[in-house]
Length: 214
Image (cartoon, rainbow, N blue to C red; front, side, top):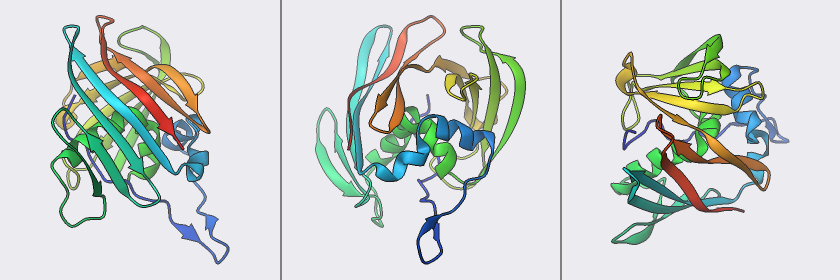
């Protein structure tokens, strides 16, 4: 999976004097976001987790994050250092790229509502590459400008409830990519997160632990 991922989070705008939320479009990407509780996101003050990756059954990296949404800060803890930084700073640390990458693994359904600058296509009656399950294929193509690695594409294979069964990452919108499952969905307060991703061999590749939602 790429180390650096795309666009910064964009907050939904507020309209009218009463601060009524802007209506969300009734598109498939937004339906995916809603399936994981996006309409409840304004109840979330912070979210934390440890992002883990292994190759050949060996743990090769773990990174701990806590995103304080209200004050736009991120706490990071890695193997050698830990610190807190501001997302609105003029100078972001190199670890911010890892934060964006890991956040897509944790919060991709929500990114579909936050992000701008992508186009999408829908293919009904698709079959998931790994599990051979019936699905709807939602292909997301990011623009070639902005973010850490613009121009990448994702194929999301959805069940009838618009939740992700598998996704394929295609670097630079290549014709072929790598696919992982989305498994072990759990509720954390008013939202849901998928905690585990396996490769085509059924081996755990990336998983989340120590999840906190406040």
